[in-house]
Length: 174
Image (tube, rainbow, N blue to C red; front, top):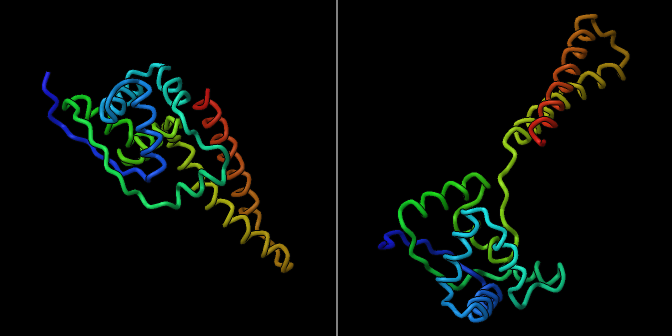
């Protein structure tokens, strides 16, 4: 089957050395190693974690990882994929909230990207709004201004909504 789509992404020097080492250890080219890693991730196999964990030159500590992140991305690796493989890769990257390049770099670093929790993001925004309104109410209360009864009722409604949101988040997590 011909591979029609090309995906490329940039790696910093340290990541590229890690990629080369892992590819050589597997006896394949860097492109083939990346393609295998991506396809295993798309298939949902556990070999991704094993392949990434066995890659030599893992970062020894957080300082080394931070230094690598600060280093500019200077190497380009390309791998050809079929149209359906590219589509799957694109969908997974978007679902995880990453570009394809960032998604692949995380795979190479042994950190399989997981899908973001869309309800959690929405909940955080909504809870921030609620918190802002509650801060305004607390400020009024500290100034000694009497608060109308309807505000108390509104706070009770907001509390019920926050509890419902918490329950929905807990259900989604399971």
